[in-house]
Image (cartoon, rainbow over the protein chains, first blue to last red):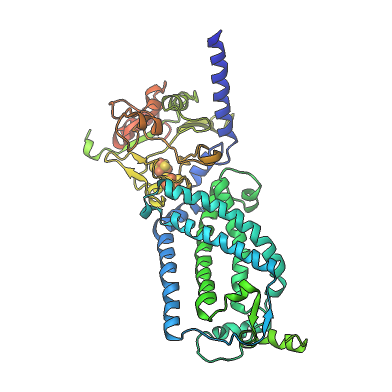
Length: 299
Length: 188
Ligand code: SF4
Ligand code: SF4
């Protein structure tokens, strides 16, 4: 009698494990097609591509970004120094409480996401194991925080972040950051640099969430793979490649953003804390916006 | 056999494999694998098409120049002198990169991490255990049996009723396979 129960239990467990293997979009029936397609001329070659990139390039590029971007700003700081604007003039209200809260929520997400991501990239120097595995889990938690922040952020700033005629001129003069002179910089409420960062965070960030979620879920079927005409495993390879390249771009821009807010212009970070910007800052760095406010007699 | 240069490999003779699942079941049982993990799989292609249908058994192929080892961010793979590709589960973070690099879909991930999330990677060890002390309880718990240390053939090949699944030094098993192909006059 006992034996019979065991038999039923074991066969049903075995059936369950075979069933879950068969349901899999990675290890199920398609595995053979994936094996045969790996690296073939007619196939995507995403497997060998991912292998080469991850084995030889990703870690080096990340290290390059982490060294070169701050080094460039250090040189900028030493050579050109901070821009200083008067903090005694009128103050212009630019960021509501809600916008500031959302900004800092996104900042918190970045403070979780970037170090934990880099801990995985450079995991071999940390010995792997629990420490790096914990970083991987925190990376997932950070994603949820970022998701909560990025949606309102996109909605309340998208209109002001659309390109304008000022942007091209701003880019051509590098926002005036290559000279010490106090000059009127062509920019509306947001300059081209800030706009670039905004799109990087919202569009790039969405790309990070999507590719990251795919890598996290791994064996799922929401039609994404078939939509792109890829097998599930190739979709994952594609996502891993995109996730890494986007991460490099975002980290480089994040460092830039922090430098601008903390070092490039003295005390400019206070606008994200109090909500007010100095009149002189606005007059020079956001000249079009200033003229508009003046036209509306708001300053 | 020149042990110095031995590179352990699997070959599955598709003209002999009868899709009995013996190897896959033996593997899962021998190593106490969790539900949902099958280090070895039996697959049938062109099912029902006469003359074309065949079955084969696949697992980690213990690649020379293994792609999995190249991409692992925590560098937890090591390749034994005899070519068996193993990894250290205490270092692995379960990132999945090895799976993306692997041509054979060998790495798998049990959902035994914190809160039922993806745990660390599991794959065929060619019954050679892992980096823990040979035949220790910990090695057995993490990697399954270490039959190689006991001088035994991997369980999958040991139970293969038709001797379709060959394991051993790459040169030697290729020689056996070639001999079979030439004597039956087909299949390469
Ligand atoms: S896991 Fe894949 S890539 Fe690594 S040795 Fe096995 S078959 Fe080769
Ligand atoms: S899942 Fe584990 S073994 Fe595979 S690449 Fe990631 S850390 Fe390395």
